[in-house]
Image 1 (cartoon, protein in one colour):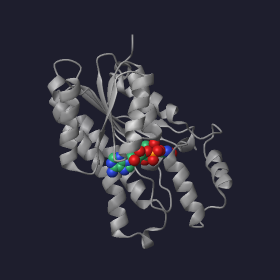
Image 2: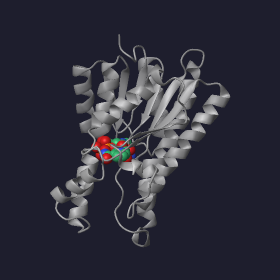
Image 3: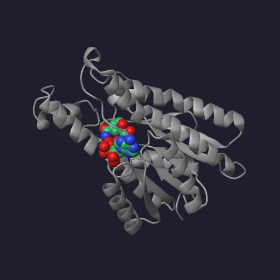
Length: 266
Ligand SMILES: NC(=O)c1ccc[n+]([C@@H]2O[C@H](COP(=O)([O-])OP(=O)(O)OC[C@H]3O[C@@H](n4cnc5c(N)ncnc54)[C@H](O)[C@@H]3O)[C@@H](O)[C@H]2O)c1
C-alpha cells in the first residue's frame, strides 16, 4: 500500500530537478500526478518517465505567473483525476546576481513574479478546489521556499525577498484554512543547495560574470557551507515533500521544514 493511495497531486516546475524527483516519488506512493512546467518538451518527457516507472502521471503546459493558466490547470486536474489533494508550488528561478544598487525593477519583478506571485496564485486556486474535499481529508499545500527564505545572502535581493515572502504567505494560508475548517494544511520547505540545473546554471553564470572562480571552486565552496559535507540531491527534498503530503504530517500546518544539511544551524 502506498502512502498516497487515492490522492491527486499537482507539481509545478516538474520538468527538471526537485520537481521531477517529487513527481516520481509521489506517484510511486500511489498518487495520480499532474506535472506542469513552462518547458513543454522537458515536461512531457518527465511525465512519460514518471508514468513508465512510477505510476499514473501526465503533463500540462503552465506558466505559474499567469492567473488564467492557474484556473485552467487546477480545473484540468479535477476534471482529469476527479479531485485535488496535494499542490507542490515548486516552480522557481535562481537569484539574479548582483547588488541592489544595480538591480533593475524589471529584473526584481521578473524574479518575484515567478518565485512569489506564483505561490499566491497556486494557494488561491488550490484552496478553492481542495475545500471541496473538506468532509474527507482536505488537502496539503507544500510551498518550496529556500534557506534564502530564512537567512540573507548578498547579491540575491529579489530571490531572498521572494523566498522570505513564501515563508510568511504559507503561514497566512495555513491559518486561513485552519480557521475556515477546510482541513487543508499548508507548509513550507527550505532546501539548502541542491544539485539541479538551477544551481549548475547559477554557478556557470557566476563564473562568467566574474563573481566566482572556476565551477569546481564554486562547488567546493558550496559544499563547505553545508556541515553535512555535501550538497543535497533532489530526492532529499522530495522525501520531505512526501512527508508533508502524507497523513504522517497530519498535525503540521504553517510549519517550516528545513532540509539543508545543517547550512542554517551555524
Ligand atoms: N536547487 C537548489 O539549490 C534550491 C535550493 C532552495 C530552493 N530551491 C527551490 O526549489 C524549486 C525547484 O528548484 P530546482 O533547483 O529544481 O530548479 P530547476 O531549474 O532544476 O527546475 C525548476 C523548473 O521550474 C520551471 N519554471 C521556471 N519558470 C517557470 C514558470 N514561469 N512557470 C512554470 N514553470 C517554470 C523550469 O522550467 C524548471 O523546469 C525552486 O522554487 C527553487 O527556488 C532550489
